[in-house]
Length: 307
Length: 280
Image (cartoon, rainbow over all chains, first blue to last red; front, side, top):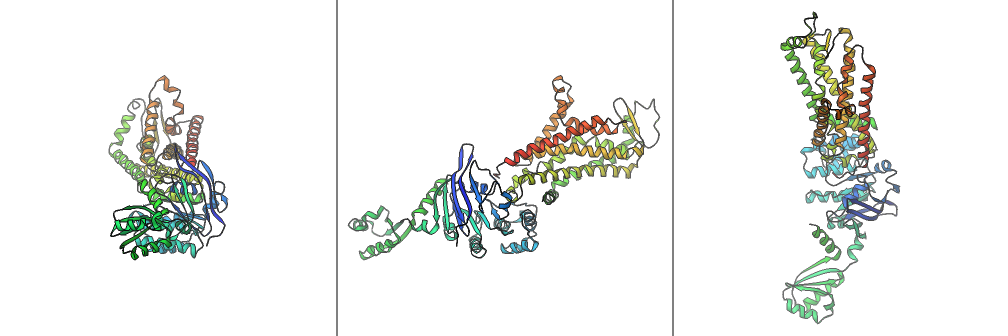
């Protein structure tokens, strides 16, 4: 889907708040047609990066290019083609959803007709409540309105900062489907910030994980998730027999640990079935096989460490 | 683009309930004063002219709409600044509190355009408040008392203006008052750029005005050198218009000083706002 045309090009981006480096020499590229997952635990520097991409925050160092143009020099021209949700969706609560969109449409740099506003309100399921003041909206409705304001001027690049936060499972699925539709049918480029690996995994083709403002890993989602060995937990009924069996076999060097009827191995995906068969053939009952990718485990670890 | 932005800012201002507090307060204040004057006005006028009545014979309708409007305009420095800060203090801080900078400043409009449109809209609100004061003061005054000669009593002089010589002075005085209030608006706007809630700018602006007024009123040598720089000294300079002849150089000086304050406050606010990291 993606071409080699760079839509976002960040080099050495750094932002300090007093002595704390929120973003530390971050570099990344997003290509046309990407759904680019921007992952990291809370406080990793995701929102600060997004704010710098949208000129809400001035970087201390580094360079940002969008559509091949320098953001500092051609801000207005660039932002005409960018739609964004930054953190939680906030609006003029004393105005209706329609009026909020009308106001924002007037300053979007493109013609946003009333028909277009109605169309986008229908897309996000708020057409019936368009005249209600935003202060009467639930968080989920505000989130949908946030998506509407990001899309209404038909931008080429859509930056979404945690767009499914506060939505119910059905709402989350609708947003994910909408993002995929925007990429596949409308040829948009999506920069999707999230703290959920599972969310990014479902829809992104490329991703970066950042922590403490620095890049941890970057690449194609499938490559990153499949390239590493899996950590696989086998739950067995008889741990002693299972240990003895493993110690006498070629699987011995694949064991990571034993505990509470659980044996944990480092395996490739092909080896899981083979080991399971080996247990069964030797009369060891396996009640569960739980694979965990090392990337996922790492991500969970840094996420938990932050909580 | 600027016209569109100003319209948007005005729309936002006039869709907020707090905007109408100023208009309601002025309407009520003027109505109360005018009603009280219906019953007690002659007594008040007699009290003000008590020292002159031995030497002069006052004839005609001196208790009229012009006289009442002149008294009401004298209250300007005390009450109207507070009403202005309610809106001007919210212009930037309100966006911060509501988190709406994130949808406003990520559009292809420059920060200077956003700032300038807000500044102009805030001043339009200020001017409309003074216009409202003029309409209700002169309007209700005309209905209740009619118009006549205007008596202006100063510390050492008393001037009586012919009724045909008064209206233009009022128009000029309201214009000058609007300029003075524009400084208050600019000050609240400046404070609004520094904080993330609207209460701070309101309190800070009123505190500055109160301190400046007190410093101006104290006759101590050390303050005399700073008094010329306090804008509060010039807010009531519209009174110069009700002199004969008008001291135009003093009036022009006051106009320039007030304009200087507006430009300076706008400039400092722009400097801060352009560099501000939006974290709300």
